[in-house]
Image 1 (tube, rainbow, N blue to C red):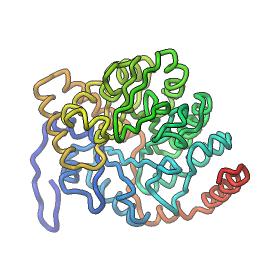
Image 2 (image 1 turned 135 degrees about the vertical axis):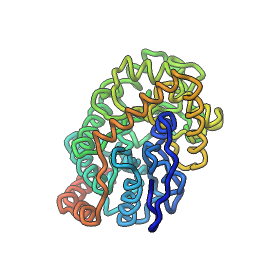
Image 3 (image 1 turned 45 degrees about the vertical axis):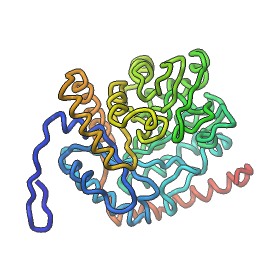
Image 4 (image 1 turned 90 degrees about the vertical axis):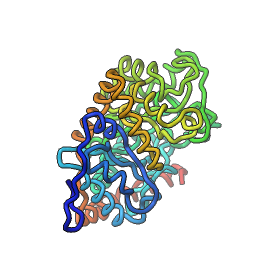
Length: 376
């Protein structure tokens, strides 16, 4: 039950399939208050968590209050995920006074893994103070195509070795301060010339080339990152004609079994046009879970999230194998949430973290080094 004002409102109890179907969803929402239907799912323990974007952020004070509201909605036994894309450079949702990282290409060019780790440790401490427990970073794609419209300077470098070196440092830095790192975009988005937000990319490379370039960082860091994110890309050598997110041969067989990844597998945003223009949302969600994804990102459309929840429930009611897969995925979401349990933010903790003189000194040192290398 929940309390609104002085009244107690009883909510119908969900059965196990309804709970699991909700717990694999990590939802975003438009600017403004959190939508009532999502908060209702959270209160019933039938939501995996939330992901926030720039539209949700007015200030760090407002953000900490919003996150406190979101986290407080979940029952005490739940360990929700509260995620953000705070890579650095052009992909950062929260502005100052949070530590502002440059594009990862710049850190790669400085080539000081300890600096990369230190920056991510400091960032993680601030994100955690704000209530987050997942950062959708680092990018583990190799910047192998200068015409790539979506990766480019988000990558640490043009070789797998460079990406591995700095990807490992970023993962260590984030996770040492209680924020799960999510390596992306498996099996590799670096050589595409199409933005999967807009269309479905395809890579025709043979498996040998994928192993040498695209897959190398994911293979090297599969036992270090707490989470990985799939890509909406067709890899001819892995699953001809099928986006990796929806392909069991890519997600379950390769990432889970062959690479031995034991953490949580996020889908990339299921609303991206690479997926949404080719599959009905209910069908793509079912296929992604069947392929081996554990948590589906639904980044803005609340009605779509509710429709997907209903479709997952219906499939679980009619297919015992799918119900078992859904239960397994739901358990992985809970496991990650428990490992990196959110802390409900308070004004005092947020203020202390964001005004830490050590963070300002690190920011000043970063600026000095970037200027010295001609990177700003």
